[in-house]
Image (cartoon, rainbow, N blue to C red):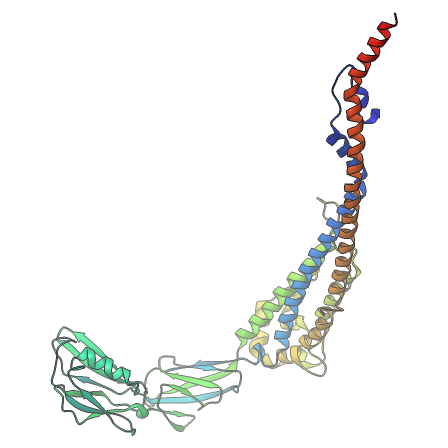
Length: 446
């Protein structure tokens, strides 16, 4: 028992041993296999974490590539440009057709309104009676003024509560307060008429509701609103001012800014994934080892497949056959760099060719081909990363089971050891008394 320090115990002493410390020394030695399993557990946890990170980046790349391949997405977006935004501005949806239109705005749509003569303030009472409000050719609505609503404030509240398409408010200035009636509909369909007035208020028509007047490519157009839709398919014209006889050019083009943003998003996502993959196979002089997945064949397969896809080319297409021809270049480390001048020129002068490079059906365009491969690579069941992650997780489960079972056995071993060392401890504590007794007996024999 000398290896546990028992030889240092004096027989003339009544002290025993530290049972807990001795038990822990034994268990520490016997726990060596657990420590080995825990080291393996740490390594596999690192692999699982790296695989999850790569999977997240792979799914993001799939989203960005699918956006490039979406025939109704960024590459189908349109922009509308007005040659004179002080007269009109324009916006376009994806359904708009690329073309140039000429618009002349002769008159803006107006919103009909009335105002009354002034009173001292909004709470000043006036004579009761009735008057009619009519919106365009609709049926007149009779407004009854009695002692419950014969102030401007009360009358405005009453009219607004009728929900008749007219907004009433009280306007106060240095001269007093007036009731204002404004149609909720612009143009001729919202023109107001006040008639049959027997109250103490006098009504004046401030603005008649008239339609906007314009021509689009020579065709006369009347619009009740200064926001004109439906005249040019997929385009909304917002009229700002009237300039009789002054043509404004509205040009509908592919939205190169949105297309450029989609390409930039793809490049950033691809670079994030390929950089993370490269790190797995790069030797780290500090840790003196490569990444946690450096021996994982599925990760190497993914890296190789991405590099194959990024070098994909089609034929003809006016010379725009791969990413490099539109200004997206492959660096030595597998990442992509964008030459903004080349890319912007390609989008500005050869938008159709760029779109065809990405989305053509036969042969499959770059994004269409990449999207197909990514669907297999990112598959939730049999994708290479997910297969590796499933294997790592199974190993982690097995390690956890082994560690748990070993710890259970060690706890049983702890009980046995505690009992054994406790008996030794008790024996050692009894030795001084036993020696004294023996000495006494020997002395009596002399």
